[in-house]
Image (cartoon, rainbow, N blue to C red):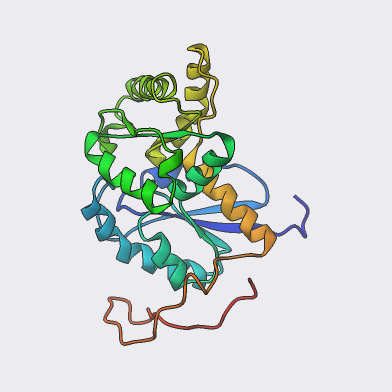
Length: 260
């Protein structure tokens, strides 16, 4: 990287109170010109596994989104396959915001006529189906498959997690006709390459996306193109009194950035 090359600052918001995964973020994308800035929430839950967890995370996400824009970040990624607070975040700031599920499903629809999300446990199936429908992707989605593991156990035994993921993904390909596999939790992002090779050994030569990496690359592209979300679709909230633990926090119209 030359001295004059701009470094893109991408804030990655982990919508839980866990800071452990953030420690690995520096090596997730070791690339000149891109600086990932991981943050976790100060309050919320230890994992996102239900609609309750989603809603509890949103206030902290919105706070971190606003703080990221204030600090000069160029773009944002909400690091969860439930995409909690995504549309609200786009209303709150002008820098581009992405999340893994939306980004991965749209990319998958370009790579194949049918994709499958392999999520964690049976309890997550209904929320994932709602997410698919909200993104108008029901016609391209195969049935949601599960690993039978809760989020907090995914890293307990990585070998067993990978085996369960590959087995569920193979069923999605051979039984459901999926042409692309999307891991249903961003904690599985680092397994995408290995899982694709294991599937190929079984005769299923299909892309396995890394949802977090897809979202990061989407934000990188938006930043380099100089575009962000439309104010027609994501208008700023009306300014009003706000009770918050940080008295400097505010919602409402602010000076617009140069992005269109």
